[in-house]
Image (cartoon, rainbow, N blue to C red; front, top):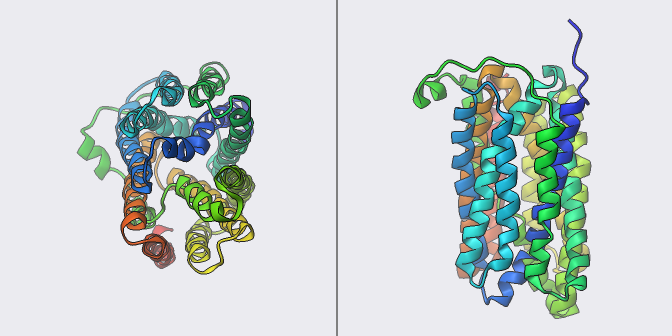
Length: 395
């Protein structure tokens, strides 16, 4: 039987859709802390917005994964998710208070949650098992190219629109809707028979033990893996006494773009390594890098060079984490359960993001930076150790 080329029409279409979609919402993400600052919002609100949105998204991912395993055609669900995310992201510009942003971000991330396990299942079905690492690494790389272009576009739009946020957020519609069009017209869905209907509980119990043990490690790490918009806020605050508020915000946006360059570079490299080495050891190394990033925040002087290193390490570990988690997930379960498995993985990650972003924001606001990022470092190391301890069980 002839093997499938891993870089095919579907892989490329999904990669480009990820690029344009991330381009859209990274424009919004980059300017969100500054926009919230104009509304007089504290760090705890940013953590709550990111955390609740991630939490709602995670449950949408589980429901979508379970439901779409039963469908003959998954692609229309993915298209709808991309459209909802694009419209809700543009709606940030209508906000006049923090809860408006919370509502728009949550709606956008619900759309993102619905589409994520579907997109991953479509991608896994388009390549051979031996190429999962490269396929998922490529998708993550393309996604992150969008996350590089997004902050750069945000910096340009801030100057072009003179910090008029409604106009800036409206511009996010263009790449967001292009992403939906790419899924609709570029991605070829493989013919498949829907899985016979079984209850949600039975579907969960059908997932293998090795996959469940993998989820425990992912969940432990995720409980400390906060949204990196908090890094943008930290850099803005720490650099403001040196450069002034305006220049500090610009430097923070540039640092986030650099973060995403490192993310893109590491994602495909990690995917390639995952296909040619021990995925679990590589994943543990990525988790440990998160603790290194937190140590830099806690112990290095708060200057531009320090933040460049912090953002670089943050981008590198994200690329390793996502490429390895997705390819391991696809490998540990049968194709007929890919939708459910990706949905559960995304839910575990989303619940972790919800807890970690909120708790890090709360600890930062109430107890200070050492408590917030010390908490994250401890859980990052615990997750890495659990992955290493369970390597033989997961094999």
